[in-house]
Length: 146
Length: 335
Image (cartoon, rainbow over all chains, first blue to last red; front, side, top):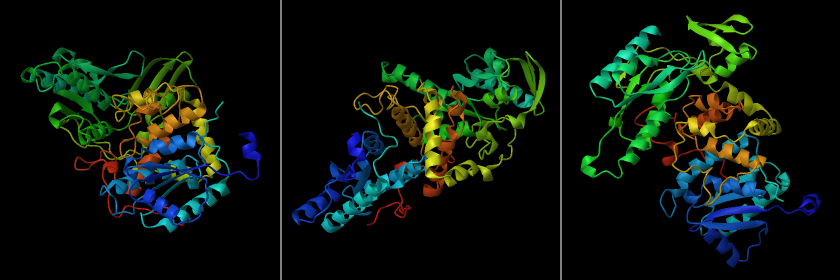
């Protein structure tokens, strides 16, 4: 772990929690279309962004993720009609509170990617990876294991 | 004050005699000088125990929820036709009624299961501030009259102005008067100083990110995870709290400091649209963690983002249970 942090070619670990109906399909499309994007992201598929317990995000940060990305359907396009709109409220409050207590704002990202936007998915991952890389390894809220 | 107290006792007596309430939750004189403690009154004779003064600290909505849940659980094994309804009377100031509204909004019980005796409130005394004011000396005796607290300590006598030791949440209170009530005791009082309620938060927001993180970690290091804040909070009523949950285990039970941070962070986050700033958690904290600095931010965000003040009206619904098409979304990342 220690060498990992010190090394120049440190690569961030990013957890992407994405919804089954839009962003996951978007990621699939990016793959099928062979669009290149950084391999730093670990995708977790959930039925809908509304299903995401804000605890998932905090827990990911605590157990070693350098960044968390949450992505779902664009507003108005949710498979469950309003899941992403309810999620938007939860995340607005969470993100604001996390920055208030002194977490870097760029460690938690929220975005919308639809099933047809393979290109946008790759762009988002590139953007998020660049931002988290600029911040360096996470130290705040991170549990030291072992 | 005296006047309110006598009226309150009469009202409680009447309710118990007329069988309008089975139990009255109120405050009685505490065992230590200058304290008041929650009590349960079930017979008219006991009603004279009730007090109402500047020492009544705890939010009684917590006990209303506890009593009703307990009663409902005890009725589970009773045949449906034999089930009894229980009405809980409660002495409620502004923040207590806001908590009751939150319970009603979250469908914890029916409006007919509570009888609210509303009392206007001019704030309560912060015991920790008083302790500081007397330099930590043991208080032997004390009394309050006309906004002055006269204290006898082992080192001598002292007089302190009540407004100097008023709890932080009372200083800028917006809802002094009960929002809903079945009867009112006493006449309404003006709001304290609501224009400055977010001053602390705005000041903290202006600090640098490192300063804020240092403050947060410093405060959380004090926390001994006794869960007193959760026990005292009227909005914390889950049958199984995430703290005790083991599948999944959300927070570790060890001494790790990030576990404490995550516990506090998530308990605070659960207060979005539910914290009424009653100050009960701050009052019971044995370590003096500055929880209000963070809770007030949650309250501010809730107002600025969703236009909701927790429990401020019966018509409202919980802000995280609904949405609007044009909610703010500046925080959404667009590459």
